[in-house]
Length: 155
Image 1: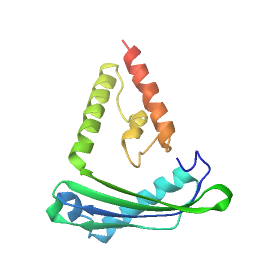
Image 2: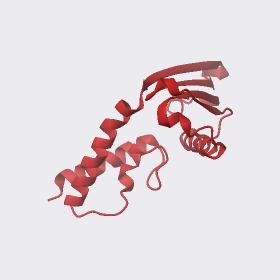
Image 3: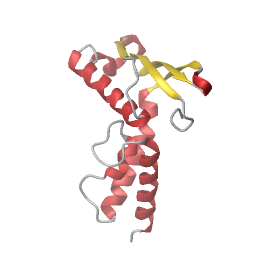
């Protein structure tokens, strides 16, 4: 949205409160650094630069499978006017992931029926940091739709 509307993102910071098993691994400095590096890479690929800011992850075991994510985005609008967008998302990671996993399973099964095997970079849309294929979300979605059409038309 920011890139398509020519809004320069100056900073992007976030805090994630994770429960259950998801939150337990983040106190490990290596895991937290990898998570932060992944978010920084996605932002840089999407925005064309790395904005200021960090992501903080806190383990809150009582949340169970639920998560709260807060993001604070500082950006410049028309004539350089500085603005802030804040979002809060609360949800259940399993409920969010379940339909994605089902879609992936169906697409991979159909790919195997069509004689395809090995890595499927066209499925990068489903991954935060895919190994191959396009890195931008719009390009990933276009690749996914083209792949689905190919699978639909395969005999």
